Amino acid sequence: MDDFIGRDRELRQLSRLLQRVREGGRAGRPGRAVLMRGRRRVGKSRLAEEFIERTKVPSLYFTASARPTMADDLRLFTEAAAASSLPGAGIFQGQAPRDWDAALTLLASALPPDGPSIVVLDELPYLIANDPGFEGTLQKLFDREFSKRQVLLIGIGSDLAMMEALNEYGRPFHQRAGEMVVAPLDPAAVGRILRLPAQDAFDAYLVSGGLPLVLEEWPTGATVFDYLEHALRDPVSALLVSAERSLAAEFPVEAQARQVLSAIGSGERTFTLIGRAAGGLPQGSLSRALQLLTAKRIVAATSPLSTQPSKETRYLVADPHLRFWLRFLGPYLPEIERGRGDLVLARIKKDWTAWRGRAVEPVIREALHRMGPDVLPEGTGAVGGYWTRSNDVEIDLVGADRAPIAGRITAVGSIKWQERRPFDAHDLAELTVHRSRLPGADADVPLLAVARSGCTASGVRHVGPEELLTAWGER
Image 1 (cartoon, rainbow, N blue to C red):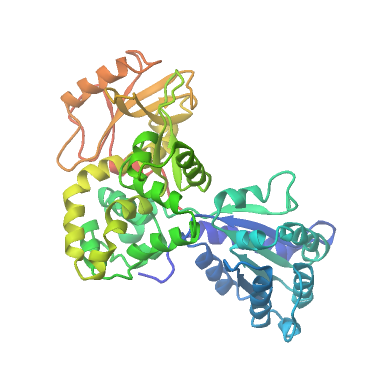
Image 2 (image 1 turned 45 degrees about the horizontal axis):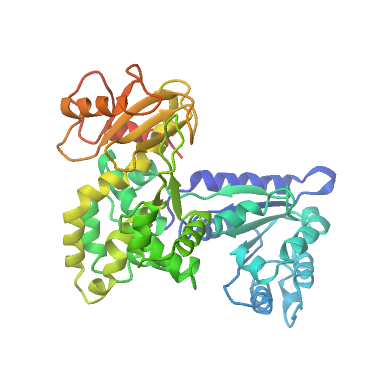
């Protein structure tokens, strides 16, 4: 497999931005900025490095650290600038700027006077945390200096909420930068890269989360268990270390958030059961931890979708790879480190079918939402699920005109994601009964069956793995 995989769309987007820089802008302002965000370990930094390598233009790549002081950031920035390929890099030799105004002014002097360049500020949220005035300083220097030069400024960050907020109204950098989201590679891309059939592509996606680092070490054509047998023998494989390093960076001190995340990863989904599994946390502490996890987009809070309001919120780990890691790998790292990955693999095989059946549900809902009228009735604007507190009614798929409270139910469906287990007449009868108990649904609402191994029932729209993969299309 090539060292760099996927990301053709993102590389094209960056190339278009650089071309605009080359062509100049209105009123002599060719400079451009873009804020690139995405989950940790998703390949943002690698993407920027690959782009710089392909363009061959002068550049500076600076990665901020989690060090506690602005002085540390300035020292590291000065060292990176002095070692960069910018034509004026030499002016940083022996310099010790006292603040970001001085450092960025020096940077402006180091840029090429008559050609394009690229400046990357990686881990931008760290810079802002260490200097609350950094945003204002960057805005001032961008307006006065960088926008007048042929420079593409790329700011990168993994704190999704903070990176989104940087471009909001009222913030210093508002409307000065474009936005770019680097998502994990989708199931269709995973299938193409690994050359897997549709069913196996979804399995690989649930384990890898679409993380390039994991896929780079995944042998072409290997099934999940072929790969796991190899990866669980290596304590430093990307499968094992990616999630651990991400969590260490996200939660260096928030022990309670880590406890709560582990409880959700173990399979608990309701407020009460999560608190119990997290060691009996007080309600206030549990609420604060859940708010932090949802704000960081690590945990998603979901509600039943119907025409009636509901307080039956459930929580799930948003990232598929982290969900797999928390359930099967994180708690058992000591076994792997002492050479007993076979015990971990046996545990995964034992619980795989049940875990996969639940883990694939949000992926399928996203696929159906992307497919829209190709599969769902006209007017479907949201896809979710429905459940009651007692779980006497639990519906995998609910299509509606809107969420979280629907005005109209457009479809009701079931997911059967097992080998050699098609959706059959018994499943159809059960789905029909559950439809009758869904607020807002009647006997005219069409039924949908998403099944890994086919459908033998009539009177229901069947969607299989191959069709689901078309939701993402070519990238």
